[in-house]
Image (cartoon, rainbow, N blue to C red; front, side, top):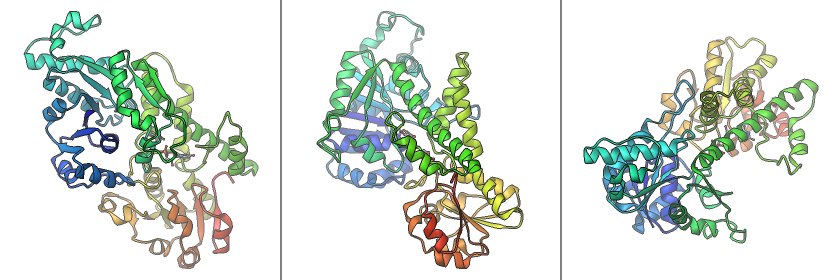
Length: 464
Ligand code: UDX
């Protein structure tokens, strides 16, 4: 099928590259020329395992192209994905101005053939109809006519659409950073929100190779379930999934804080409750809280939507406030061990919000750095990705070291912030010998406590 993906951020680029990989003809559009140049050369602007490889293969086989020309992309695609960012505004609402510009832009370029316009960006609930209206606005702009905006049968109300037949579909993504390519080929489900049978059929056709697990790691599994629903429910599914997962983590973090006080071990508790199939064992890892580009933004946006519709989302607000407190659990633990933090040096192991990504958006490390700076503590850090990239220069209040031993040198304590796999295999004996005080606050309960103790560390976990 002919696909156009507009916006080559995380979601757009992974979607475009994976759809090209399964055999579709994809044009990716982005208005950033530098980025387009980079991608044409087969380089991914984001760090994501396996992504450059599939991009390069798709470029070589002619299945993917990159351009800044929206018109060319719209003309090419029978399915048009809107995959631009919806970053959070200070109020917690999503900033949808990029979606707005793209939807209008699509309208001004539609060329008459039937198109399915897919919202892949996480957009506020109700955006399907809004995007439809904006596309119509774009068409009208081109026709230099005023669009009648309002409910009712658009086709009767607005015959210009006969020139450009289209339907809007919501098709949220559930990709995790660091395993986005894997997640695309091995999804738990595919959600298609639309009330139009033709659009639904085209979306099903698009995903057939994935549904049939042709590119999955485990090919013997049953087909991937497809959830076909109305637009608003599909939009809600995305928010509800992220809000549930974030709440689940806040829940186990709250349990961890109680464990700390009563002398129980949250890792054992998580195991014990996770074996109950109604609860499940995933996302029960206590630690310094959730961050990243999705959970904080989506939970806040859902709280905001609820507010807009006259409902106060108490549980979601509590999940956010537990998380805000949890992000500073490292400071609390440092104070318990070191007492005064002023004039001390603390080293952070990891900066990104989770491993296998270079993403620092809403990373708990940033809150830690800011708070420790405020307390007069010197902060150093080592991160396998940030330390090796230009990103380290953009960070303030922290000295980014080039290796873990330099980090340990002269520190009064270390805090493990990100559960990078390689942190399980550092030379902790050597690191302990370089520290003023070999203290390890394991903010993810990720290290082998006994091994650390044998290496000479005073080990402190979260909730254990
Ligand atoms: C998440 C969702 O998983 C994905 O489906 C959605 O599309 C985008 O948001 P991502 O932000 O990449 O993906 O990361 P994820 O692996 O879900 O982790 C989110 C945060 O929760 C991280 O900060 C992680 O460290 C934290 N986390 C996760 C925990 O603290 N404990 C856990 O048990 C799991």
